[in-house]
Image 1 (cartoon, rainbow, N blue to C red):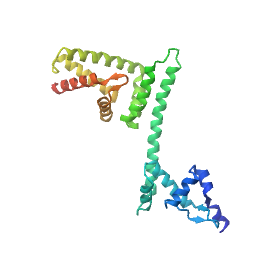
Image 2: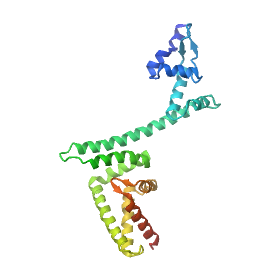
Image 3: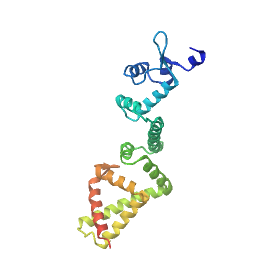
Image 4: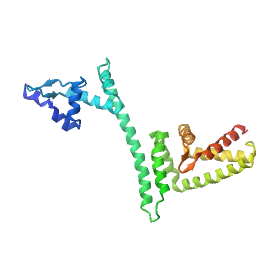
Length: 247
Protein backbone atom coordinates (compact mmCIF):
# COMPACT_ATOMS: atom_id res chain seq x y z
CA UNK A 1 0.00 0.00 0.00
CA UNK A 2 1.48 3.38 -1.00
CA UNK A 3 2.13 6.26 1.40
CA UNK A 4 -0.50 8.35 -0.39
CA UNK A 5 -3.16 5.69 -0.02
CA UNK A 6 -2.21 5.16 3.65
CA UNK A 7 -2.88 8.86 4.28
CA UNK A 8 -6.46 8.42 3.02
CA UNK A 9 -7.29 5.60 5.43
CA UNK A 10 -8.49 6.08 8.99
CA UNK A 11 -8.34 3.58 11.83
CA UNK A 12 -11.50 3.01 13.84
CA UNK A 13 -10.03 4.80 16.85
CA UNK A 14 -9.19 7.83 14.73
CA UNK A 15 -12.71 7.96 13.31
CA UNK A 16 -14.17 7.70 16.80
CA UNK A 17 -11.90 10.44 18.12
CA UNK A 18 -12.57 12.82 15.23
CA UNK A 19 -16.34 12.30 14.95
CA UNK A 20 -17.46 11.55 18.50
CA UNK A 21 -19.04 8.27 17.37
CA UNK A 22 -17.92 5.56 19.77
CA UNK A 23 -15.77 2.63 18.68
CA UNK A 24 -18.50 0.33 19.95
CA UNK A 25 -21.05 2.00 17.66
CA UNK A 26 -18.74 1.76 14.65
CA UNK A 27 -18.18 -1.93 15.39
CA UNK A 28 -21.95 -2.42 15.62
CA UNK A 29 -22.54 -0.69 12.29
CA UNK A 30 -19.96 -3.02 10.76
CA UNK A 31 -21.51 -6.13 12.32
CA UNK A 32 -25.00 -5.37 11.00
CA UNK A 33 -23.69 -4.43 7.56
CA UNK A 34 -24.66 -0.77 7.81
CA UNK A 35 -21.13 0.61 7.54
CA UNK A 36 -18.54 -1.98 6.51
CA UNK A 37 -15.04 -0.48 6.21
CA UNK A 38 -13.62 -0.75 2.71
CA UNK A 39 -10.22 -1.97 3.94
CA UNK A 40 -8.75 -3.97 6.80
CA UNK A 41 -5.16 -4.01 7.98
CA UNK A 42 -3.13 -7.21 8.12
CA UNK A 43 -4.22 -7.79 11.71
CA UNK A 44 -7.89 -7.36 10.79
CA UNK A 45 -8.16 -3.78 12.05
CA UNK A 46 -10.81 -1.69 10.33
CA UNK A 47 -9.64 1.04 7.95
CA UNK A 48 -12.09 3.67 6.69
CA UNK A 49 -11.89 5.58 3.41
CA UNK A 50 -13.34 8.99 2.55
CA UNK A 51 -16.28 7.18 0.93
CA UNK A 52 -16.86 5.28 4.18
CA UNK A 53 -16.86 8.56 6.10
CA UNK A 54 -19.38 10.01 3.63
CA UNK A 55 -21.65 7.04 4.32
CA UNK A 56 -21.19 7.55 8.07
CA UNK A 57 -22.28 11.17 7.70
CA UNK A 58 -25.41 10.04 5.82
CA UNK A 59 -26.17 7.48 8.54
CA UNK A 60 -25.87 10.09 11.27
CA UNK A 61 -28.01 12.58 9.35
CA UNK A 62 -30.75 9.99 8.88
CA UNK A 63 -30.52 9.04 12.56
CA UNK A 64 -30.93 12.70 13.45
CA UNK A 65 -34.04 12.81 11.27
CA UNK A 66 -35.53 9.94 13.27
CA UNK A 67 -34.84 6.94 11.03
CA UNK A 68 -34.16 3.54 12.58
CA UNK A 69 -31.09 1.52 11.62
CA UNK A 70 -33.08 -0.90 9.45
CA UNK A 71 -34.74 2.02 7.68
CA UNK A 72 -31.37 3.67 7.12
CA UNK A 73 -29.95 0.49 5.59
CA UNK A 74 -32.90 0.23 3.22
CA UNK A 75 -32.60 3.90 2.32
CA UNK A 76 -28.88 3.78 1.57
CA UNK A 77 -29.19 0.67 -0.60
CA UNK A 78 -32.19 1.96 -2.52
CA UNK A 79 -31.55 2.73 -6.22
CA UNK A 80 -31.52 6.45 -6.87
CA UNK A 81 -30.62 7.35 -3.29
CA UNK A 82 -29.78 11.07 -3.18
CA UNK A 83 -27.18 12.02 -0.57
CA UNK A 84 -27.78 15.72 -1.22
CA UNK A 85 -31.43 15.38 -0.22
CA UNK A 86 -30.40 13.85 3.11
CA UNK A 87 -28.01 16.71 3.81
CA UNK A 88 -30.66 19.29 2.93
CA UNK A 89 -33.25 17.61 5.16
CA UNK A 90 -30.76 17.51 8.02
CA UNK A 91 -29.89 21.17 7.41
CA UNK A 92 -33.57 22.16 7.51
CA UNK A 93 -34.03 20.29 10.80
CA UNK A 94 -30.99 21.98 12.36
CA UNK A 95 -32.24 25.39 11.24
CA UNK A 96 -35.62 24.70 12.86
CA UNK A 97 -33.83 23.73 16.07
CA UNK A 98 -31.75 26.91 15.96
CA UNK A 99 -34.91 29.00 15.60
CA UNK A 100 -36.44 27.18 18.54
CA UNK A 101 -33.33 27.77 20.64
CA UNK A 102 -33.44 31.44 19.66
CA UNK A 103 -37.00 31.70 20.95
CA UNK A 104 -36.06 30.00 24.22
CA UNK A 105 -33.10 32.38 24.55
CA UNK A 106 -35.39 35.37 24.03
CA UNK A 107 -37.77 34.22 26.76
CA UNK A 108 -34.92 33.53 29.16
CA UNK A 109 -33.52 37.01 28.50
CA UNK A 110 -36.91 38.46 29.43
CA UNK A 111 -36.90 36.48 32.66
CA UNK A 112 -33.28 37.45 33.38
CA UNK A 113 -34.21 41.10 32.93
CA UNK A 114 -37.05 40.70 35.41
CA UNK A 115 -34.78 38.93 37.88
CA UNK A 116 -32.28 41.77 37.61
CA UNK A 117 -34.80 44.33 38.83
CA UNK A 118 -35.19 45.32 42.47
CA UNK A 119 -38.81 44.12 42.54
CA UNK A 120 -39.04 40.42 43.53
CA UNK A 121 -40.11 38.09 40.72
CA UNK A 122 -43.24 36.12 41.50
CA UNK A 123 -43.63 32.38 41.10
CA UNK A 124 -46.35 33.18 38.57
CA UNK A 125 -43.80 34.78 36.25
CA UNK A 126 -41.65 31.65 36.40
CA UNK A 127 -44.68 29.49 35.65
CA UNK A 128 -45.72 31.67 32.74
CA UNK A 129 -42.18 31.67 31.33
CA UNK A 130 -42.04 27.88 31.45
CA UNK A 131 -45.54 27.62 30.04
CA UNK A 132 -44.75 29.98 27.17
CA UNK A 133 -41.52 28.16 26.34
CA UNK A 134 -43.29 24.82 26.06
CA UNK A 135 -46.75 25.83 24.86
CA UNK A 136 -45.87 28.37 22.20
CA UNK A 137 -43.42 25.99 20.57
CA UNK A 138 -46.19 23.39 20.60
CA UNK A 139 -48.71 25.47 18.65
CA UNK A 140 -46.65 27.95 16.61
CA UNK A 141 -44.13 27.24 13.89
CA UNK A 142 -40.64 28.77 14.26
CA UNK A 143 -41.52 31.19 11.45
CA UNK A 144 -44.70 32.29 13.24
CA UNK A 145 -42.79 32.81 16.49
CA UNK A 146 -40.27 34.96 14.63
CA UNK A 147 -43.10 37.00 13.13
CA UNK A 148 -44.76 37.47 16.52
CA UNK A 149 -41.47 38.63 18.01
CA UNK A 150 -41.00 41.09 15.14
CA UNK A 151 -44.51 42.48 15.68
CA UNK A 152 -43.85 42.87 19.39
CA UNK A 153 -40.70 44.83 18.65
CA UNK A 154 -42.54 46.88 16.04
CA UNK A 155 -45.44 47.99 18.25
CA UNK A 156 -43.28 48.38 21.37
CA UNK A 157 -43.70 47.35 24.99
CA UNK A 158 -45.94 50.31 25.85
CA UNK A 159 -48.49 49.34 23.21
CA UNK A 160 -48.29 45.70 24.27
CA UNK A 161 -49.23 46.71 27.81
CA UNK A 162 -52.06 48.87 26.46
CA UNK A 163 -53.37 45.95 24.42
CA UNK A 164 -53.30 43.77 27.53
CA UNK A 165 -55.37 46.34 29.41
CA UNK A 166 -57.76 46.72 26.46
CA UNK A 167 -58.30 42.96 26.34
CA UNK A 168 -59.18 42.90 30.05
CA UNK A 169 -61.68 45.74 29.63
CA UNK A 170 -63.14 44.18 26.49
CA UNK A 171 -63.62 40.75 28.04
CA UNK A 172 -65.27 42.30 31.09
CA UNK A 173 -67.68 44.18 28.81
CA UNK A 174 -68.44 41.04 26.79
CA UNK A 175 -69.07 39.05 29.96
CA UNK A 176 -71.47 41.74 31.18
CA UNK A 177 -73.49 41.57 27.95
CA UNK A 178 -73.57 37.77 28.14
CA UNK A 179 -74.71 37.79 31.76
CA UNK A 180 -77.47 40.24 30.87
CA UNK A 181 -78.62 37.97 28.04
CA UNK A 182 -77.94 40.54 25.32
CA UNK A 183 -78.69 39.40 21.78
CA UNK A 184 -75.49 39.02 19.71
CA UNK A 185 -77.17 41.22 17.10
CA UNK A 186 -77.48 44.09 19.60
CA UNK A 187 -75.47 47.16 18.45
CA UNK A 188 -73.51 47.20 21.72
CA UNK A 189 -72.42 43.59 21.20
CA UNK A 190 -71.66 44.29 17.55
CA UNK A 191 -69.32 47.10 18.61
CA UNK A 192 -67.59 44.78 21.08
CA UNK A 193 -67.20 42.14 18.36
CA UNK A 194 -65.52 44.66 16.06
CA UNK A 195 -63.14 45.67 18.85
CA UNK A 196 -62.40 41.99 19.54
CA UNK A 197 -61.53 41.31 15.91
CA UNK A 198 -59.40 44.48 15.72
CA UNK A 199 -57.28 43.36 18.68
CA UNK A 200 -56.90 39.87 17.21
CA UNK A 201 -55.79 41.42 13.92
CA UNK A 202 -53.29 43.64 15.71
CA UNK A 203 -51.76 40.63 17.47
CA UNK A 204 -51.66 38.34 14.42
CA UNK A 205 -50.85 41.00 11.85
CA UNK A 206 -53.63 39.56 9.72
CA UNK A 207 -51.73 36.26 9.37
CA UNK A 208 -54.41 33.53 9.14
CA UNK A 209 -51.90 30.85 10.18
CA UNK A 210 -51.11 32.66 13.43
CA UNK A 211 -54.82 33.28 14.03
CA UNK A 212 -55.48 29.55 13.60
CA UNK A 213 -52.62 28.71 15.98
CA UNK A 214 -54.04 31.08 18.61
CA UNK A 215 -57.47 29.52 18.29
CA UNK A 216 -56.06 25.99 18.46
CA UNK A 217 -54.04 26.81 21.57
CA UNK A 218 -56.99 28.32 23.43
CA UNK A 219 -59.27 25.49 22.31
CA UNK A 220 -56.84 22.79 23.45
CA UNK A 221 -55.31 24.16 26.65
CA UNK A 222 -57.28 24.58 29.91
CA UNK A 223 -54.98 27.42 31.03
CA UNK A 224 -52.97 29.90 28.94
CA UNK A 225 -50.70 32.53 30.52
CA UNK A 226 -52.31 31.85 33.89
CA UNK A 227 -55.84 32.40 32.55
CA UNK A 228 -58.63 29.82 32.58
CA UNK A 229 -59.63 29.36 28.94
CA UNK A 230 -63.13 28.05 29.73
CA UNK A 231 -64.76 31.50 30.00
CA UNK A 232 -62.70 32.70 27.03
CA UNK A 233 -64.11 29.92 24.87
CA UNK A 234 -67.65 30.95 25.84
CA UNK A 235 -66.93 34.60 25.06
CA UNK A 236 -65.32 33.77 21.72
CA UNK A 237 -68.34 31.68 20.72
CA UNK A 238 -70.58 34.62 21.68
CA UNK A 239 -68.46 37.03 19.62
CA UNK A 240 -68.50 34.65 16.65
CA UNK A 241 -72.31 34.59 16.77
CA UNK A 242 -72.26 38.37 16.81
CA UNK A 243 -69.98 38.46 13.76
CA UNK A 244 -72.30 36.11 11.87
CA UNK A 245 -75.25 38.42 12.49
CA UNK A 246 -73.33 41.55 11.46
CA UNK A 247 -74.77 43.32 8.45
